[in-house]
Amino acid sequence: MSEAEIDALTVAVAANLKDLRQAQDLTLDELAKRSGVSRTMLHQVETGRSTPSIAVLWKIATGLDVPFNRLLQGQERSGPSVLRLDHAKLLFNHQQTFSSRALFPFDGHSRHAEFYELVLKPGGSEVAEAHAPGTTEYLVLAHGSRLVVEVNGQATELKQRDALVFAADVPHAYRNPDRSAEAIAYLMMTYHSNG
Image (cartoon, rainbow, N blue to C red; front, side):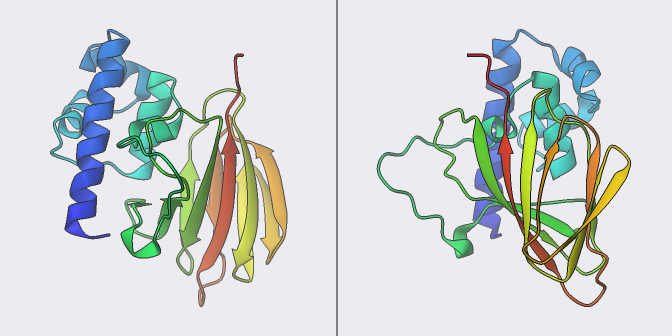
């Protein structure tokens, strides 16, 4: 991701976090308690001084009780949208062994489903905390020899083109046991709808 794209992502997250927090009439301290993210980190994200990792964004989204993509939304668009790989907004874990690329436009619309490309470097892993109640993940291993998905302590190994569906409102993790090749998976996430 280029510096300009990182800056655009940082600005979008900062503005959305501030708007969402204020709309819920939450202080930084209250959101810190609800999300498990320190007040200092929330302040840095909200003021655009820090681009958070995927794990931090998930914690914030959970604390605000909003879909993950709500923190990433940008300008509203109309008509077809092409999401060029060379302009992708990638989010990484702290170890830089896992990346997530949204395969839908950040257009200001709230969604009940999202689509992502996940890339795990050889030997890479990512641990995810429980998402909002009712969240379901649909995952297919598109490239790579194996992918291990652990859901609430139970491991399932996928081979290329295998698919897995699981309730993501419990802790889960993705692990690429292959130390010689990356694993690429496609993930559709759906959120519980109240109406």
